Figure (cartoon, rainbow, N blue to C red):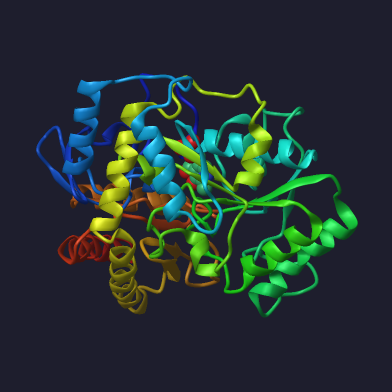
Length: 422
Ligand code: PLP
């Protein structure tokens, strides 16, 4: 995770350092730099550009709202913020009806943590060993990588990290089913941690390498949470709004969370996040002095409404499911030709490709990934290589509007770059 070091502006561009192209224009899944070079984008700006760059519906909603009323703080709700709450209640699973608007995914997580403490009266949190939930203090304390917490203690919220279905050596041996993986939560709640407010999880690991949970996993997790009276928070900041081929990642598991955190795709490019809760849980926030001046502002919520329209009109979830299948087929073809291509996995357009040392299966050294990023950019592809838990995953999460031609071009560039690496 070395490329993510903190920087004040003016920052050295992070993607490939000084040589990172300066982007000036974008449409669909294609971006253009200041020199007029075009790139197919397999990155979608940390999976936030699900609708494609500068989607006309989002652009006109933002421009119309900016002309009419460009700002109103939380004290004066506006029509877009009211309507966005209603629309989110329609699309979100189960009884998730009340939305609390913020400006980013990390903030949405902060709200969820505070809400869970208020609603349960407890103060401990559980998160998965390879979890990523953001970079603010509370959200960061949930992240599984210990390196993320270095220099931030000692007064971080108290979090116990639960061994996940991706854990290299699962305690007591490798389970066979998703439900069996989930049983460890029962053990932890029974014997190790008390006063727990919530268990938070991404329905599919994003930052750890785009890794889906096994079938049945979250169903059992939710049952255990219910039995112990703790809240289940689904962090859908990446997986929300069609990314995994269903409206929300948790829909793959037929589970209704108590709280859901969303951001990224919600704004279609505008900064907005929403913590969505059941009325019962949301009521616990009534007397809290907790607001963000810009949270739920009319322009961001108008963008959110337009992005939900596009999500439905263009069936972004259906696109992601279809394009994801197509992409996986092509990647398996690459895998059959290059011995350093290890596991390939994914759901919808959240796909992970591990690069390994063919001799012993260990993660391929990171410098190869940086070369890959550079070689790909030179050939017109933004390819986020060198990511994930071991730093050896190519995380492919393009805009959900990507077409077959763009996917073909992207995979053809990967093929050329792999040839150089072989
Ligand atoms: N939660 C998850 C699952 C994420 O992947 C991220 C960011 O990648 C966040 C929260 C934090 O979102 P933001 O960068 O908008 O603060």
